[in-house]
Structures are given as C-alpha cells and as structure tokens.
Length: 232
Image: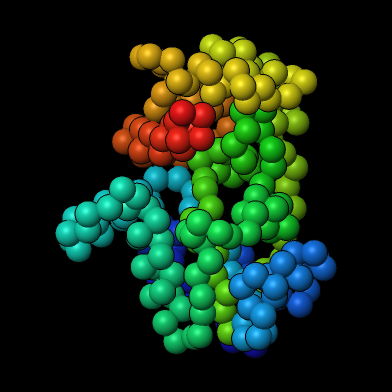
C-alpha cells in the first residue's frame, strides 16, 4: 500500500479525510457505487474529504481572487480543484460536488465523523457543528483505509441543551426536528433565520471553530435558495 500524503489538502483547509476500500463497504452501498458510478470496476477506493473550522473558507476566498473565478459557489469550485490536484497522479472521478451523488452523512457515520444534532446539522466532539463534507471521489489508489473515529456524540453530555431554547420557530425539540416549522420561519420576510441558524450559534460545542459571519451567510443563503426553489 502507498501512504496517503494529505498535506496539500490540509494546507487548503480540507483537513478531514477518510479512505474507504470499496469492496469493504456495506453491501448496499458497494452495489450502489458499482451500479451508478463504476460499472466497469475501475476504482478501488472511495475518498471522502471535509473541512473543520475556518481555514478552508479563507483559502477558498484567496483562490477565487487569485484565479479570478466567478461562481455562485466558490467552495465547491475550490474543493473540486483541490481534489484534482491531490489525485493528479491517479485515475479518479469526483462524484461530489455533483447533482447526483451518494449520501455523505451515511459515509460520515462510517468514518466516525458524524452524529446527529437536535438542529439537524452533523456534530462531533472536536469540531462541533463547524465542519462539513466537501468532496467525494472514486480513485484507483491503494491507500491504507482509514480507521473510523470512535467518539460519542457531544450532545449526550450537553447540559441544558441551549440549542432547543434558541430556536424561535420551535422546530428544534427534544422529541425531534420539525422541518415544516423551520422552513416556514426561514421563508418569512426579514426572518432572523434567513442567513443563519440561531440554534447552531447557541450550541456550546467547539465554539472556537465557529465559521466566520461571511461563511455562515454564504452557507445559509444557499440553503434558503434551495428551500425557495422546492417550496416556491
């Protein structure tokens, strides 16, 4: 096996990486990959990349400015470019970002990155909710598969769960998340939740890694556009 050198991804702020051997994935997921993306069996591994904290946004903004990129989603463009750079010596196919991809959160759970939070954003003990999945690639690599992280959800030991009280729509509840309430509240004129999530901001886990206001606005503006497209 060849040791994976993730230094270029780390330098770009894409500091979460997981390598899966496709033949060792759960049967349903493996069959889905082979059927939809790799019927010829050209690829041996699946590489999941994410970011935690603020560095990726800073690096993406510098890259966009330097390359004079004009795009609605500079994070996606940046992530794709960095993945091509990382895998330039290998045959590969990027399947996320893309309109048709695999369930990233299911893969994140296999990697041990992801726990569910009351406000429906993935959470882990180190980064809190301030991390995200950024790229997924099939590759003809022979890297050592990544051992899953083993850490309990930080929500289990959270006293008071301030995220519940912080949600003005009442969507974040002990018994579950009410998507309809969240969507209706965000779609109101001058909603305080149009470009942020007050429950997420109230979460005390890993607050030192909170995204910048600019990145938060960018992320939630995209999600609001998707909501308007679906419900409009």
